[in-house]
Image (cartoon, rainbow, N blue to C red; front, side, top):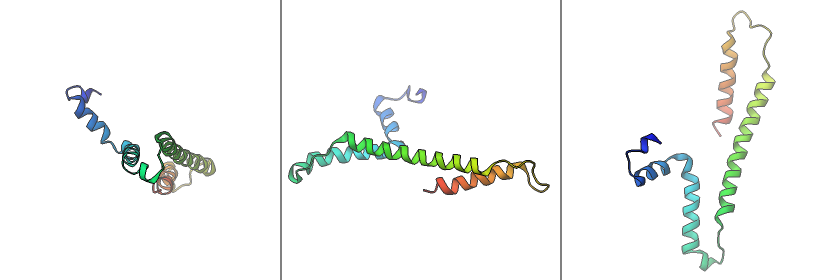
Length: 108
């Protein structure tokens, strides 16, 4: 927060809201607001904000837990060799594990 000390409150709010991790919840709030203001009366369906946000955060928790479970399964299944073979370096196995994790979990 030290970087915001010299800036005004509006500038600090703009910087904070421009972060990508807040983009989808902000879009949900904007859609909720615009829909209830413009179309809810004519359609007859009013949206609730809390279930929308809870659904989004439940999805994010599921994605994180799925990646964590996959990582733990991979790490427990790989095991550690008793001794490295003559041509293999001990860091090669770790590099292979990281590459497998990056291709499987981070490309989703």
